Amino acid sequence: MNKISVLMCIYEGDNTSHFQEALESLLPNSEYFSELILVINGEINKHKISIINKYKKYLKIKLVKLKNNVGLSRGLNIGIKRAKYQWIARFDSDDCCTKDRFKKASKIIQHYGKDLDVFGTYIKEFNFDINNLSFERKVPLISRDINKRLLISNPMNHVTVIFRKALVDNFSNPNFYPHIDGFEDYALWSKLISSNVKFRNFPISTVY
Image 1: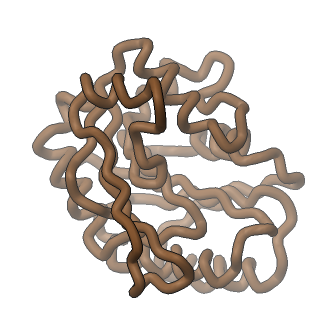
Image 2 (image 1 turned 90 degrees about the vertical axis):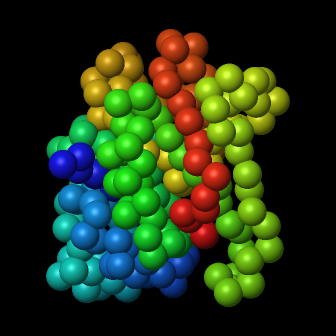
């Protein structure tokens, strides 16, 4: 069975309610991932800590506590080293998974995993209220079109992306995520695509 590690960072500036909603959205998915690596990027308030403690009862949370906020890209690079399983899924603290995100991801890995290194999906965007969806961000599906899109815009929805842990071992010299906060994902795709890593997107939305 292909197992998935979920990687998330939280810092004091993140919206506390959104963070709780993000964790709540993982509950229906918990059967289909094996651990949540939660990087606490510097000091956070007691309310966030109490939320983490609440969800530790239901989610397989592996905490990585950093004394100081080192930025998102560095935080991800630290957390990613703790990943135990074959596939690593990104998830942000202000997003919500669909109820079947990881069930669908497991099926994709089962059917297409041998031919993939990195894959993602569409996302549906909302402002403040998840019941008021405003836009679906579609991305190119096949490797050739993903490569072309990279020249003008980001061809992957980062918060949906799942990639092989082996990539971390092969492309972490000096760092897996380049230290360019705000563009760390775009820089990563550029690095991996130039090394002929196999990309694909699927025409479903798995993250709000």
